[in-house]
Length: 301
Image (cartoon, rainbow, N blue to C red; front, side, top):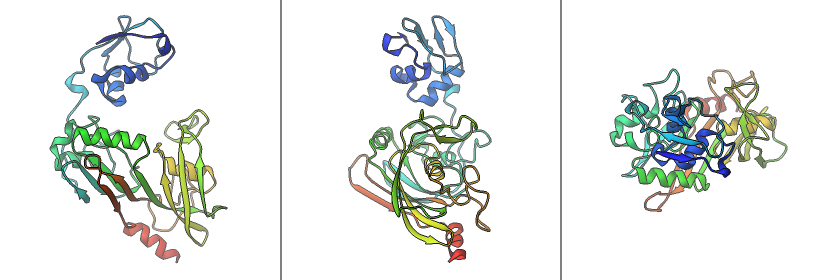
């Protein structure tokens, strides 16, 4: 495939331009892998930097993706707690500690590996390194996650998320007592300039909207319900820290002080409500607090 950079694309990142133009590469993740693999050239010169800024009139050539760009996910016998399943989607209740998809240090022990074992057909659904997965949860966040079982369901769910048509409710325990019993945090989130593995409220970041409601106060903590309107990386954790009420047990964004015997952040994806991506039937699924979080609450009450 070959195309010419237009005046309106002048100064844009190479991976962004390819995402807008190159359907065969499908996803941003595949595009970046293709760039790193040397499959993209600008005016005949191969580039391996996704952040390269393009210039009007440059000719971009895309070589056909090689098989090694889409390695098969290794099946795994990890068990999955499936709370809903039909021909198009499944909803998993993910335990804390399970990584959603492969990355550094986690190539075979992820939810994606287990999902491919359970539904081999999803290997070609969505991104090659996270087949069928349309949204994510942090490793130490437990709760509900949707998996698409075919391309149509995947495309529809992805669009629904972009249009904020999937209601995602979380329960959390935070330090302190918010001044208002309910509120909305409207603050863009981007990469933390001082810590490359962290996110932060950043004027140059992407729009992020979080709604919260205090369920009850427990000593020096508050038990809250959170509704996501957008889904930025670490959004709830970053937003609650930004207003002075970090998630209890969050070792990255929170306070060192936690609760005895709680080994992770107190954050649980407790409810999903949406219209089925194929039938449009309303689906609402809930998940109770896991034992470790329930025990933490019991110790304080």
